[in-house]
Amino acid sequence: DRKDADALVKRVHYSGKVVNNSQVHIGVFYHGWLEGAMQFGPSLDKRKMVGLVAGTLWNEFIELNRMAFSDALPRNSESRALGVAMRLLRQHAPHLKWVVSFADGAQCGDGTIYRASGFVLTKVEQNGQILDWNGTHIAKKTLDNKNYPKINGRYYSRVLIDRGEAYAIPGFQLRYIYFLDPSARERLTVPILPFSEIERRGAGMYKGQPR
Image (tube, rainbow, N blue to C red; front, side, top):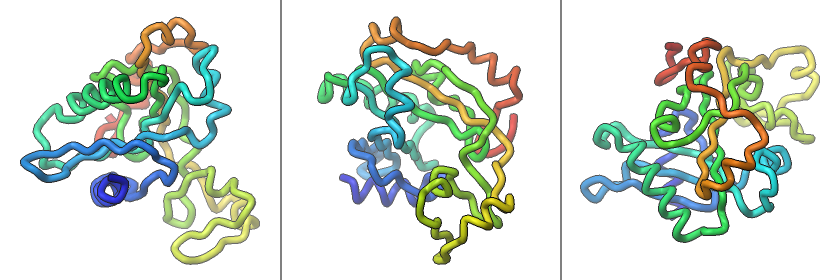
């Protein structure tokens, strides 16, 4: 359930944070203990995502918001669990055509698990979404909010942002897509990039360390 998935993500995920609008929570159990969670939901800005596959209706795609696995799980658990999750989505949400997710190559990794699980790479770009603000990592979308962001219990004036005290963490963001409906691949409106593009761009990262 949502409560257990959130607790696991906060404990295991490198960010320590959940995405509040996640709607589907799939747990990974090992010897009776919850040791992994995958949380799916709508993209924060669906208008920018829906056009990635031509003809996609508003409810025909979903984002893998969080994927958190503890070290207690056996090797290759991530790719195995993703395969099960995709089968569950096909079975219980047949209206979904594709899944989008992002790898944080500025703080975590470049998406090794996605590549091993049948996702295609569609974007590699310099990180501009995760910022360092006085030692606190914060998403740019939070700073773009019309209200002043609250960090560590304090509200900060936008003037501080304009003076450049928040800056992008060095690294990359990578976008991956999985096609639940194989025919959706034919309607992809952006190029599929070879995985070698990650190395070419110097975007490789594993467990928070550049490759």
